[in-house]
Image (tube, rainbow, N blue to C red; front, side, top):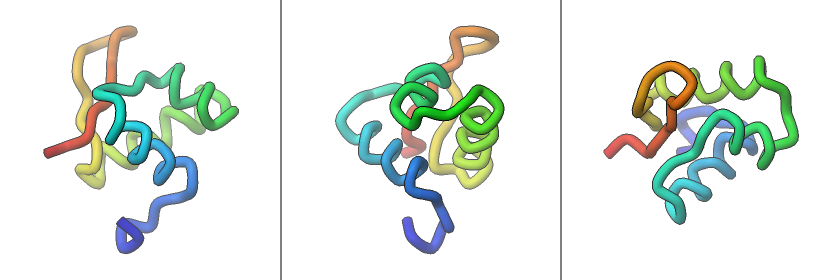
Amino acid sequence: MLSLNLNERQRTTIGYLKQNRFITNREYREINKIGKVISAKELNIMVEKKILRRVGKGRIIKYELND
């Protein structure tokens, strides 16, 4: 994972997802104590790097580890 150039919050999220099936944007913000813009950006980066995948649409999007 280090070669993917992830920040500490993103690495923490991967650990969280190894114990929990999904994470939402709200949970990501609460765990990391950050705002909506930063959380959306960081989650999108992990989706682009194929670490996470989006499940659902609109306000009910959840993120899970990509197999």
